[in-house]
Image 1 (cartoon, one colour):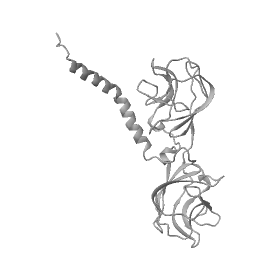
Image 2 (tube, one colour):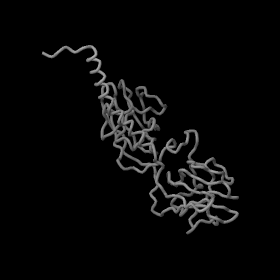
Image 3 (cartoon, rainbow, N blue to C red):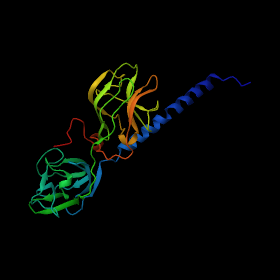
Image 4 (tube, helix red, strand yellow):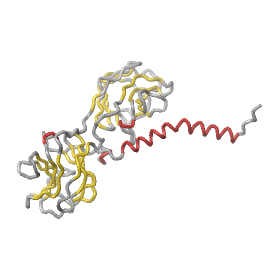
Amino acid sequence: MAAPTSGNGRQRSRVLNVAIAVLPVICLLVGQANGLQGYYGTKIGDLSELHHGVSGSVYAVDARTIFLKNFNYDGEGPTAYFYVGNTRAPTNKGAHRLRDERGRAGVLRKYRNEDITLSLPEGKTLRDLRWFSVWCDDFATNFGDVQIRNDLDFPRPTKIAGLSGVHDVSSDNIVIVDAQTLLIPNFSYDGEAPDAKFWVGRGAAPTSQGIRIPDENGKETPLRRYDKKTIVLTLPGDLTVFDIGHFGVWCEAFTVDFGHVRIPDQINVPPSLKMLGISPQQSRFV
């Protein structure tokens, strides 16, 4: 006959069971933090270090956006600007001058290990360009540049399958706008289930170990009825699409899958504004 379990023993057992239950969620959260850190898009290259302390790494965020990581410039050049062009070597002849990260057209200030985001001129994409440079107009001097490859595979939004399932869950093809943003066109759900939530997690299909996603209004309450409404969802915290294998609608109370789609293993989407250190109130584009 087994010995009776003491009150402390029962409490330790309950604690152990809780720890086992939450361990997969803890592991997923650790993966989230790793997913957010260090992704800025496709690396174009490092700036050549020619004059005035210019240095830093250059990334393609998307077709029209450049991100400079740890950018340095001593600010001592008389008329230094950011330029892009399609000539063989940097020059301001026929090139395009970029506004700075604040949208200003003035001479560049001093930068010290700063992360900044720049937008290309209207109508131009990285496909049209061969280089990015810090250029001094007065002395026609290249302070530092990076070459843009013809075959550069810059990130872009990716379209995946649409939702289809029970309780009238459906949508058109979902668009992964960036690493933390999903666009769900014409989403429908009858609103009849008691505890339906937007849901993501690792693996090919939903489980109770997944994570609820706030609705388009930032709420985690049970989903209301939707009738072909286009909505935008943001993954919470540091969670990115690189950390998950599916997205769908899940009834948390009864652990029922109402419909889900797979997230591809290999997708080349832009980093989110948050990953670039830009607040949602700011525009990525100038």
